[in-house]
Image 1 (cartoon, rainbow, N blue to C red):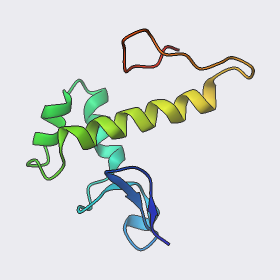
Image 2: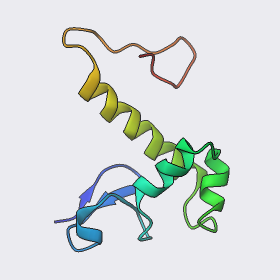
Image 3: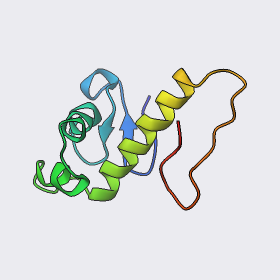
Length: 91
């Protein structure tokens, strides 16, 4: 069964064994996150796939990955906060 993860991301067991992909493509989210980890900008990561994904789609992948890490590694009882005026979560 296909799951919509966000505006740009989905998972479907019939596509890439359920690995997270960008909608309308077979591009794995994990590969794009690897490019970001290597130092690519959001725009450069999108360009690496000939702009078949948008900069906004890449940003969504980064934000979902950050939220997943926070959920896994945040000490229990600690409340999640955001830096004032920032989209990035404080850790």
